[in-house]
Length: 310
Image 1 (cartoon, helix red, strand yellow):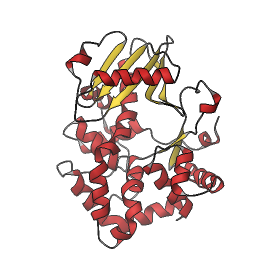
Image 2 (cartoon, one colour; image 1 turned 90 degrees about the vertical axis):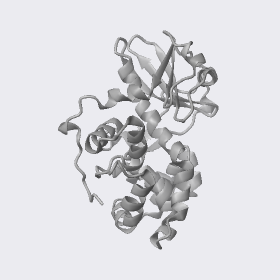
Image 3 (cartoon, one colour; image 1 turned 45 degrees about the vertical axis):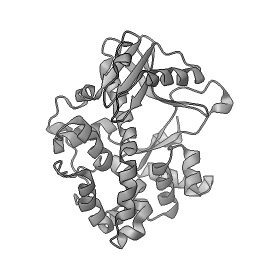
Image 4 (tube, helix red, strand yellow; image 1 turned 30 degrees about the vertical axis):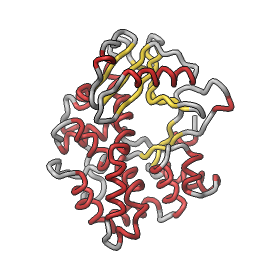
């Protein structure tokens, strides 16, 4: 067991999503994912009638000094921690690349990581399967326990000087250019939960992602009967094409994995060509399937705000 697993358990992403959905009653699942990717985990009341960019300005940018003060209480204003968190938020989440982006040594990074795990800021994620060749083994990935903190260290913290002076342009432009890309990670993580709900007859007993030096697979899972499930997610305004399935199969070949079932999860549906391939070995999951994540919501799902609401 990794040293990173010894710390207290944080609410899961699904628990946070269900709480957010119950509290804010979004108009649809796409809006829920987009707004949750920014404000998830904070239990703030969100005006879902307001455009996301305006919400960010009113709730975050205008309250920068107060939120910054609260976050630095947790991080103890440690410069290595802040550099590391920005490195994780802006990169591929692998420890090595986060340290490289942060420009800090492995020793300083390890110390900062220990503190951030201890304070419930981060969690470690490991490739579900061991790479076929030892030399292809790579670092674990580092996940923020709350989506909002990933947003903060992606778009707010790097521009603190201009934001502090009342100039929001840099931060707003960066978010506008990366908004869809930014939501992809939350979509992929929630898609893992959707897959769990879609295999009732042969339940998923293990699920995660796979990565090595040569390839990555968004979703890799094993069922109770021993079947291997591989998935690819497409968070885009265009329909998923047959090429997505082809790409997934190529990724599996590079990882020397032979999936029994391939799953394509798409925000915007599928082309007719891809639909014709649907069957026992190819499953297609659309945004409507995410509805299974927020069924039977009640007061019990709501998590109270632990700090200021802003």
